[in-house]
Image: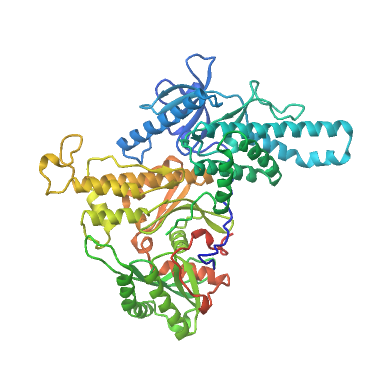
Length: 288
Length: 352
């Protein structure tokens, strides 16, 4: 058995497969808040707290994302109102701050804390997770092409890889910039990193990753903090998300960290803190 | 196979005897006895007094359990005891009892993780197959899900446990510890009407309770009868805030936090079943709130009553026997106990 002095290393938690298909309950059970009509809202996802829809706002030509926090029936109504208001405002404030400081996030179009809704700019494009999954999916064929070593295919491969590495550098810079302005995301996964693409992201001929900007989304757990610990945990969560995709994504994440390290003044000490966080997992072992 | 289980990680001494007739059949409970050390109002239980209590009752309880179960010493396959986590002195007292029985009767020992005991017993009683587990008691607050042979901790209390928060508040307002401080708070809370603002501290899937306790203690000082009426805390409608209101507010706040972190874990792993175990899991308001949340997600909640929620010997016997059936025993020289023993340190060989 593990003694107190030499605890057995605990394997980190692997994110499990998300439930497939449309979530049960959730979207069907709640009526939308006042200005939004069910016909104009297409469910996107159900998080722990919010229901997310694709809709339009003010004009039918303005695509938008509606993030609705329905009242929780288990919570005392007073407490529920207080929490919904505090969280919604905190999220909106962080987004506005990011926007002001030039971090690429969806713009806040409207909010109503009584109604529990927040309307954000619709970001076209795919997630970094989607890009990575697509790349992992093609890995076997890419390595075959590498063996055949025809000149044209060899060049195409390096072009794709170069685009992928450029994407990683963008991720590193985006996260570095976010931390620099004193915001920690709180749930930094590859699904919460989007690559802006004005045209709908489709399987293009070249297999090149989209070349747009990185947009950070879902600031529901974000905090305004400049602590190395919080920043390092952010990076650790992102590292786990990369590792869960494929072992081959490991060097890609190193590129993210390398760029992050040069992106702002305090970044080097965050990377040192990350070493500690890696050893113990995201939880401090202060259990009594 | 039949196992005897000894539990004494906190102020309850439990002795249980369980039989696993066949892997395909449910376990049979032959005996489940418990004796609780109750401290006077306004005081907690001290390790040395609790250990003394366990020492003086363990022989009696084992004899009674053997008699009630109608089993002979030869029928037993192993002696299971709580290895940890828990209070040092009480754990040691029970570990000594287990070692003595093992040598006396020539039976193998099995050291059991207390948290895994709670989870396995909850699963066995309710028949929940692969739930997200909320384990809430005086010493532990964890949100757990099973994944590749480990019970993984997804969220936990960052400082004191939720039960500890409730128990210590019971001490502050000087309500009896009999039968349990948490039970008495629950009864008072049923009469509370006004919700008083308390801090609400959820960080992702983790929660913190020490600040809430400190705030509740401060509020409790402001409702004392000795204060002149104009200085006492008033609710929004101008009426005086009562003890009942504070119990109600404390419960509403901390349970909302527990349900929220559980919901987050459920969304994360994509499960719709939730199992509540541990002493605080008896609380009917918590069960009700959890039920409302689960219904909203199209799922269901499983909970047990005080016989299996509150620390007991049968869960140690059950989890120990499951491990014993996979060939795990604890050698006499390794039969130590430990105050820190994380749930995810246990290799769960008996589940796929």
